[in-house]
Image (cartoon, rainbow, N blue to C red; front, side):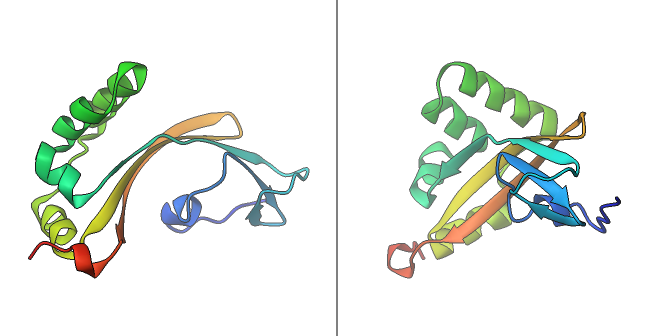
Length: 130
């Protein structure tokens, strides 16, 4: 059985559940004899006002997280260069978006890897800052 993936987003988006299986070339949550994909999801969410208050991902992590999760996210930030770019910051402020940054550990047939991605969700125009 072969899973054809043309771009990484074919596997990552939409985010997979914790345990998925590949059955007849399709990713599903129903168990079958095909290969499995384990997803260890870790994420942090911020609103426009959170970003204004902290002015950086580093500040957001330091102010909102504690303990092992804080240390893990500081490590992700350093290792993967996670940041909110100026155009992303502007877009969040203009649209009132909710930002979620995922740091996922994926394990596909005993081969482990990590993926980092940002999701921007417009939550409402009435709360926009112009």
